[in-house]
Image 1 (spheres, rainbow, N blue to C red):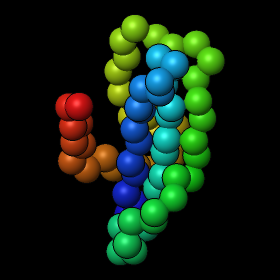
Image 2 (tube, helix red, strand yellow):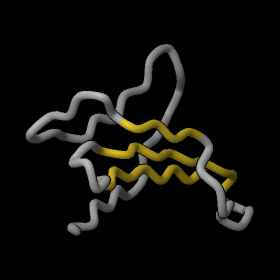
Image 3 (cartoon, helix red, strand yellow):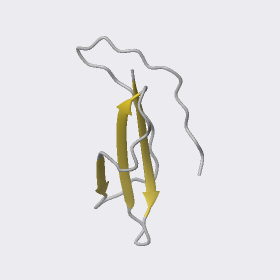
Length: 67
């Protein structure tokens, strides 16, 4: 099992910073982000999609926290 955390924050210039990290569920959460990217073009709205392609996967509880 792994834990996945993703977030998007708005930068002072109005663009989004997208961050992602994952780690084994039996380990402590890392303090650094695995992937981080600042958007060049942003969307007015969005959604979350969980997809498994050619893999045996189970998605447990999903929590979305409002700002």
